[in-house]
Length: 194
Image 1 (cartoon, rainbow, N blue to C red):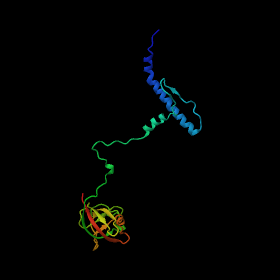
Image 2: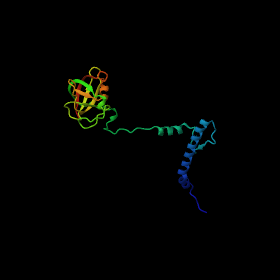
Image 3: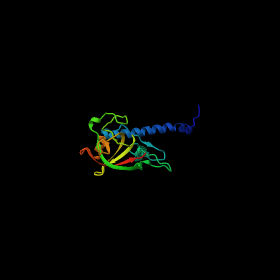
C-alpha cells in the first residue's frame, strides 16, 4: 500500500478545481440571466463554501458582476510623455497671395468632356477654372465679396476670351460662389501657395 501525500495532491489538483468552480459560476450567471428573460427557474444554483469565508453564489453576488463590468469597459491608449494629441489640432489655412479681382463667368454645358489647353478633359462637376496667364495646376481661391462664399479651383485651361472677364469657372465652382443665376459676378482672387 502506497502512502499518498494529501497536501501535494490537493495542490496539484487545485488549478483544475478553480477552473471547474469558475465554469460553474459562469453557468450560474448565464442560467439566472436566461431565467429572468424566459420566466423559467434555473435547474440549480451553485453554492460554494470556503473553509474560512462566506458562501459565494454566482449570479447573485454583486462582486461577481462587478468583476466582469470592469473588463467590459474599453480603455483608450494613454499618450506617452511628450506625445502630441493630433485629434484637437485644426488644419491651418494655406498661405495665399491676393492677385486681384475681376469678373468671373462659367463654362457652358457644351464644353463638358472637351479637351482643355492643359490636355485634360473638362468636367463641369470638377472645381477647375481657366485663366489667361496662371500656370496649369495653380490653385486659386475665388471669393464672391457680395456673399462671402469662396471656392478653391485648379487652373487647367486658358481663357476667358470674352472681353472684361478675368476667370472662367466650372459650373460646380460657380455654384459654390453663387454666380450661376446671374451668369457672371465680381470675385476676388488669391493664389494659394504650396
